Length: 220
Image (cartoon, rainbow, N blue to C red; front, side):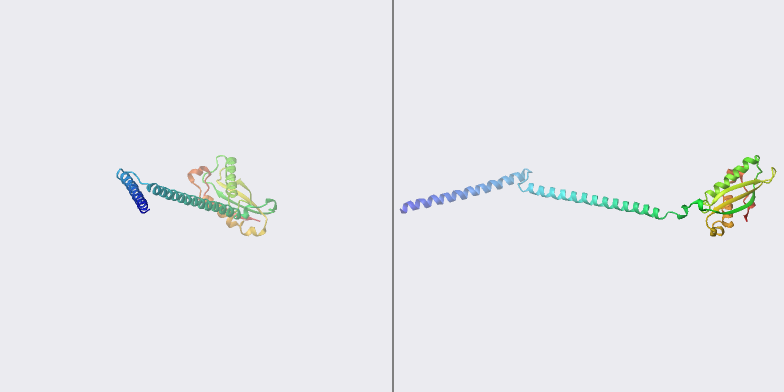
């Protein structure tokens, strides 16, 4: 019995030693493989994990940048929309109430007459008077203050040899208080006088009016 037990113990001992040797040989083989791959410029089994981690970080970084760009674009778009809406609302609220009027309610009249002198007498009286009348009509119709109230202009000539032209202006309006404010002689006269001083003598030619010759009176 003792000799049998001794043999069993020797077999176990030899088996354990063999396993230890095999384990050491396996570890050595793994180390040699890793060393060989490292020397040959290869990568170890850990490197793929490192690469995956780097790729994930790069992917997250790109996504973060893309998200910031999208957010910036959305903010700019919203600001633009708000500005456009604000401008539209502002323009809608700032409509000039004076532009909204009903001429059928204009039952009052204010008339002015006067004269001025042409630099050169008309060669064609009828054509010259029509041209001057057209100038006066365009002048007062385009006036921001007086355009809505202007009715008509008339011109008269004193004689074929005279360079003096007489005129009459008619305005209509709805409220009596306008007679001494917007439609006062001073305002109507100043609009005409400013037009005369803005004339270009070369462009006006024979239609040039001497600014200093302008006269205007209120008709009663």
